[in-house]
Length: 167
Ligand code: GDP
Ligand code: MG
Image (cartoon, rainbow, N blue to C red; front, side, top):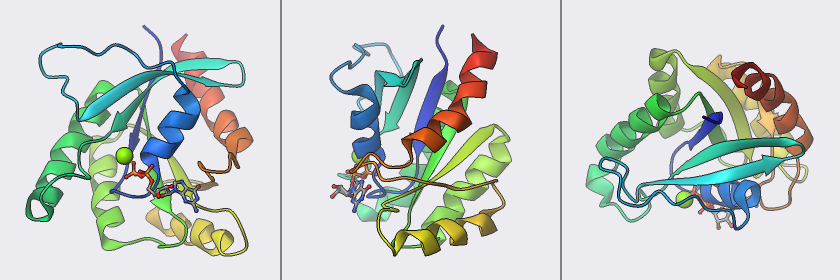
């Protein structure tokens, strides 16, 4: 079984953009396994010489905003339990929001391996968002731009030991 990375975080931080960058067209067939709904999308990721499975927590964007917090929590907990590690994404332009704090709590409580990614970090504005993310206490934040492909070397460096340990 390959190493599984779940990309988690509130809507609009760029989870699916990063998923698409890592997976390209290599979408896994997650078909009709019970319990694996369309809310969790799996694909075969490549990053340099690493291959692993990546899970995108989708399906929240269409949710009724009233039910969003509960659904986010449930879906994130499921993804965390399925995965060997999580990539928790923030938006550098928004900084650390109260919703991000909720995710941070879920991840701390589950006590798994967390890589902290701060997306949309391209350009001069990005740096402040990356620095602000230190205060979550989840380790060194990695500045990323899923859209422009920046930070992929740092993401590689964070993932490589985890993937190697799992092999
Ligand atoms: P998700 O809801 O977390 O899956 O987020 P999406 O991947 O759907 O992205 C939300 C929005 O952010 C889209 O308009 C993306 O084009 C944009 N986006 C994603 N990554 C980046 C990035 O690295 N930089 C910038 N500026 N925008 C991004
Ligand atoms: Mg998405």
